[in-house]
Image 1 (cartoon, rainbow, N blue to C red):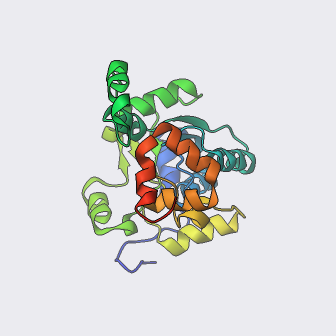
Image 2 (image 1 turned 120 degrees about the horizontal axis):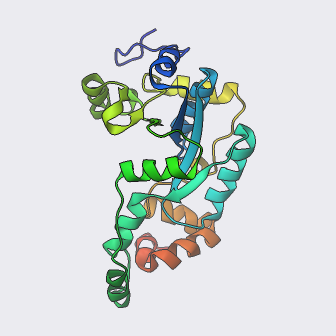
Length: 236
């Protein structure tokens, strides 16, 4: 079957069986809680791969994130490691949404921003994942022309970057179908933002200010001047 961009779609993800033979049967999966990550975890399990999920938080201590992680731990019967996202440390290092009086304190911390490879290494150490295992990602070729070209050039298994892409050849209908077939619910992010939470701009902060005030206050504890994003939209 072909999707609307001319990519071959393998609904049974048979290639994952060959992947397990060539690369081993146990790997990590970067679990953002988004639909593509959910579909990737399901696809791996359906193919007999053992995948150990880890989540990288952008803001620590958000209730809606903790609630969805607890839900996914129940439905997938596994523990999900939660570690800081490199973007969190990068924003803190460069004083994003920090008031002037915080700059000296932040500079004194000498914050190190890890690479994704370093995060993967930490996830391996903190879980039972075998050394040298790859990391599954939910990126799909149909998401954009740039990603489609990336898959044409580099493929869907990339040992050099320690990654593989279980649903790289899925279209959106297939992604939704595999999630629905397993009775999995999407996180509240999709009601709030229409997508999984991955930023501290107005797209995410305005819905939090309106519907999840405790989580909004938590964001402001970490990024005090993020409130300016909300003020720009007339919310106080």
